[in-house]
Image (cartoon, rainbow, N blue to C red; front, top):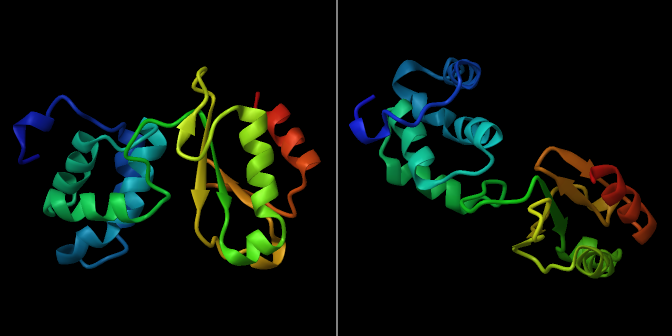
Length: 166
């Protein structure tokens, strides 16, 4: 690693192996093309992408840290601030809104006692507003921790989800 300040920051061997598998998909001189996958892997291990972690990934991929930071701050699936154990991202784009997403969002705000961009006091839940997630026909919908999609939401389905996540 080129930056000695990053020596204390390490990802697990498992995460580095996953990043290496992503890097292997590209020509050797284009390893920075794996930045999105590498940031996702790092975030999964560490919970969120603090600046030092973004720099670590950039250094590992031999790319300017600003380029990795641009990716991490552009896409809403990356968290550059701490989030709760369960991040719920509600799509509020027009198709979802027309199918009741605003009511679902309000139900979540009431149940959790937080607004978009906030985390419950116990650190369990973070509520985020998201852009189109490509499931307009299944609206309204949300993502749990960027990986599990919940569709055709109703207040009852939200209550079941929250109970399951407790």
